[in-house]
Length: 281
Length: 315
Image (cartoon, rainbow over all chains, first blue to last red; front, side):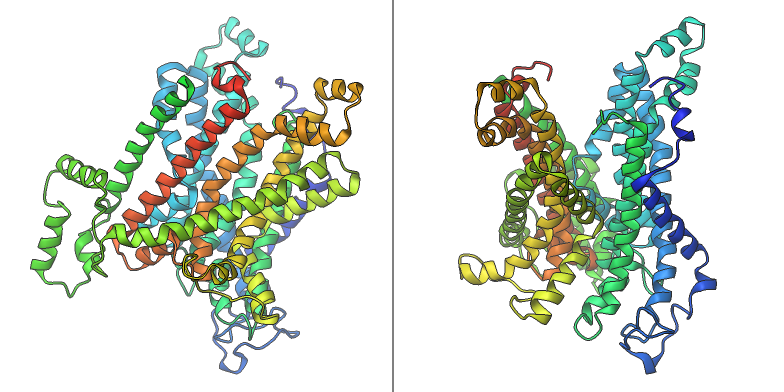
């Protein structure tokens, strides 16, 4: 990819799947940000008269075992889900991208020094790594964000290092060196922007999975702690009353699936965007 | 042969690093892990005894040496809540997790590979169906999918038990009845990945010059697709299956808890909730070792599927 190619795709409109994904995410972000305004009820208000009550006009998703409004709780839970998803990936990128860039650009001893420990993080199943960190630090939404960032860091560092290796040999990089640009300047100004594409694609997909990981950890009681509304916690509560009030389980589950779908579609679209010939497929 | 030996030797540092991580797990807990583990009603003598048993009162290097040498002799320590030796707990839990993950992977391959092949050579409709299945399978969280299956097959149709477990050796049929829902739950998401990989690899293989040659030779399309192209596409499929096995092990942690299967995953979750650190340590060690061993087997399998890799050549 040349220096021009990185500019050109930005002007192209996001089409097809990516547009659908971006639309979904835009709606979800608005719902999450405006939750206090949109939510018809207080997400934590217990209403004994509405225990396990079914959906109706003012409670479109029904009520849970404590008579709390499931719709309002889903809206507030999106704040946690999306916050953890975006936050964990940003933290992982802030650390992983520079590491991958340095390892790929300078190579040699620095490469081994950086990548050996990074590869060791990949030697554990992701969820197990998260559980181990939670064992040490204790549960909570901040810990979940940190744990997911630790899982993602080696993935992003690997992806960036891989694309840097593909870019350093390009004529424009060699040309810049020949013009007298310092190695560091070369790395930051020419190599970095041209090797970010695959990491951005990966980041979008990873945000989607972060929503699932957060939900799984909260479902196990090891993530977000009650009474904070979280989609995973709602699924754990909903499972207890599955037969009497399936809506308390089905709607939070759908909410997760839709959010993940949004990120996956955007990731798919971005992949086609940065790599129109499907080389990295 | 050299390739095999090299791969095996390369896993030793990984295993050692993992053992250091697992060893540090209990030592990094803020405060006194023994006090936390035993609860605040524990007498100071009790705490001191167990601290001594865990060698927590010695220098870190000595602790690690003692711990590792006990480990290599098959002594994983004991569970200070139920007082059972850990090796006993794990011996009953490991087969459950292995059965769950291996059956899921098997089912995912049986469903995902043909679907991927169909998507690669089939008409537009087959492509769209695999596309939809892949995106759906990736987006839907597996434990919620499990809940939906329970709602349908246990709560509504009352065909299958929602949770519980019978060992295979005690009653094979009952064991399988308990396994159907958790295995299907894990396999659906997996099959999505496998079918996407298979489709990509098959598209590439079917476009390769050797396929054109085989067609020109007049080989039946069936034999070209299944015997020749699929063999060529098998390396990426095995890679993904190997990588995904780790995801399956992670998924098993949640699915075992959901379906009440007494495997290593549920053991881990229960132990973390009870702050039963020695059990967490043992369970993490077992899952991580399984993962590393599977990665090794995957690498060895490549070499067998594609001799160019074990010969050390560029692929």
